Image 1 (cartoon, rainbow, N blue to C red):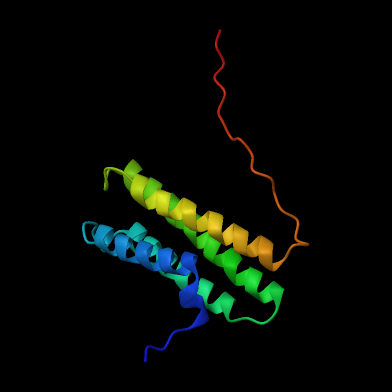
Image 2 (image 1 turned 90 degrees about the horizontal axis):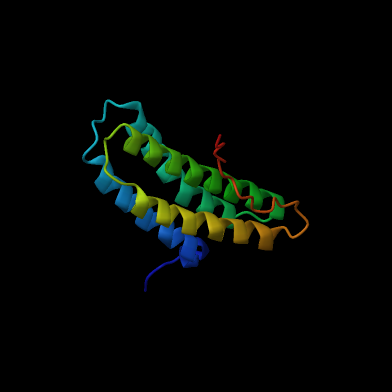
Amino acid sequence: MRMSFDHEKLEVYQKAIVFTCWVDGLLGSIPKSLAIYNQLERATTSIPLNIAEGNGRYTAADRCRHLDIARGSALECAACLDVLVAKKLIESADDGKAMLASMVSMLVGLIRSTSPIRVHEEPADYRAETMEK
């Protein structure tokens, strides 16, 4: 009989594990001596760990706190991928960022369903406007 925990049933947790494995393959091509290596590895690992810990909490505030941390770590991973592309250490971050966008969306949904009285920021359209003369 296979033992399973409640957090393992969450789709966002399963996606976080898949992302962790994807990043592991990516890190194989990056020198361990670079700061970004350690930063990406830690942020990636933080996502499933905080989802699991948050899911095990009894109060809504505790659950949301850990889910917020997982969400923040996912956003940090997206920034790390941008840095890797900017430094030309990887060609593209599109696959990883697509996985992260899905996880962030799911985490926001879990946070909202856990604490419906929380104030939520509405999505904003951030665009740089060009000034033509």
